[in-house]
Image (cartoon, rainbow, N blue to C red; front, side, top):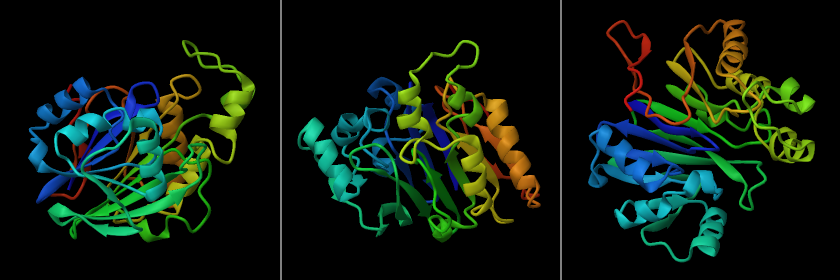
Length: 277
């Protein structure tokens, strides 16, 4: 199994590709239609290679490219509440399928939707994806992760997890150099609240319950470009996992470029091939 990030922030959108031995899955399609086309082409993927697009929730930075996905004939899978929210804003969409908690998809994939708290009308969800040989967990846009929420995905081969903000910096309301200032009520509601986004510390705690010796890599996503820095996110998560005896690869995904692939060499060590665009 290979994992690619197409884009990974609220500004550029969020979209990931999981490639198995018999096909590929999109997880969210938040980039522009042009970027999405370019990214799929750069990975050598035809629309017919993509078995489906899993949608975590209906916020624009996760569904900006949904009309292109529908036009390309790629099946769209979402929970009933997310489908309702998308149709209410965008109108009827072809190729849509309601996703139950665990669904078998083409390409030998099984996707499990794990509901999460978020300020979207439809909440959000994580996806645990397996092709029978390896597995990927995608966790993004969650205000908090109760202790046993991700138990079904413990030991995932690859984990993509939101590490949105540094809590101290967000609580201060002062962005890092070059960042945009946000009103404190926005930070409280959209970042710090129980329906906001995961801080670096929250991500570290959630990952400590998911990552095991079977996990090859942790990819941190959806970092705030105003109230976080990649080095802070990586250091926080890496230190937490190292204290529990796991010393695998932890990296922060770039916001606006294709980045991948996660794979293993003959020694079983995870690596990143690097930026493709």
